[in-house]
Amino acid sequence: MKQYNIAVIKGDGIGPEIVDEAIKVLNTVGKKRNIQFNYKEYLMGGCAYDKYADPLPQETLDGALKSDAVLFGAIGGYKWDNLPRDKRPESGLLRLRSGLDAFANLRPVKIYDELCEASTLKKEVVEGVDLMVVRELTGGIYFGKPRENLKDKAYNTMVYTKKEIQRIAKVAFEIAQKRRKKVCSVDKANVLEVSQLWRETVIEVSKNYPEVELTHMYVDNASMQLIRDPKQFDVILTGNIFGDILSDEASMISGSIGLLPSASMGGSVGLYEPIHGSAPDIAGLGKANPIATISSAGMMLKYSLGENEGAKLIDEAITKTLADGYRTGDISKYGAKKVCSTSEIGTIIANNI
Ligand code: IPM
Ligand code: MG
Image (tube, rainbow, N blue to C red):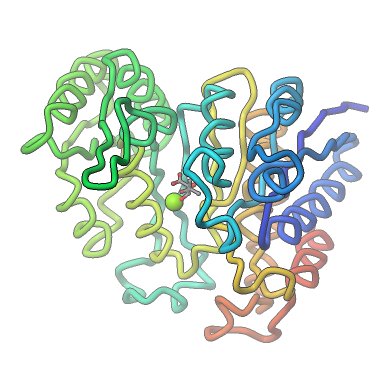
């Protein structure tokens, strides 16, 4: 029997409930595929701050680095909103991403046919959308120095080295090669020097991938094109903050932010998390949609553990569950035969494995 050690970081808000469902589904995959998952839980975010006055205790980073993959829920909440920046839950997550050197964040946007009507966009616009946002995750304005809040003025620095751009561009082109062979690089090269270097470097890297078509788009235009005609995109390659914004926007194509998974890779250990936050307003109520997290567990099987069959089982089980009309509240307006709680839908997905 194969065994994998999974570092589990449930986090804050709805984090624990959605991760529990992902574990339920993983265990069912394990039974079916003869795999044993050994889970070890670690604290990060507000819960870690409450216990250790540090949103990313060393033990968590060490544990993550020793694992085969990290499964993560969400962090943050009102309670910690007024802490100094380096104590906030979000700082814990940023330090974890950086500590794992998880510079390549893959955010696939796929529309489940059953949910075409759940999008606020027209069915004909969203039907068949299948794109991947490749977001640089450990650089850019999130990490750039100098940064400071001097109270009468504050600043951040958007900085990318050529190396950082090269390595994320390479990831995007390699993914595109296995898809529809199109990369659209998104920047703001008409205004920002950092984007000019981004664009020049992406063009250089593209020379190694002659079969992939490269286009460029300014981020303002890209945000418009994403809702005007999302089907034009295959792989969107972009920096940290633009990718943060565009991936939230892209999630609305699919109907709910509760559906979109992500994989963050680059270092020796991958990190898997839904793209959404901790939704403190519905925490503990059993209303959260666990599909993004379950689907992230599927990405973990595929990208970190090489268990492609298991990943396929998860995808198919989610699709069947939606096709059978089971929905959580966020997507319940359309085609719902039964509105389920977080754990109910998790169990149905697990049973469909
Ligand atoms: C995301 C989130 C994070 C980010 C926050 C929680 C720091 O919005 O994963 O998209 O900005 O990267
Ligand atoms: Mg975000």
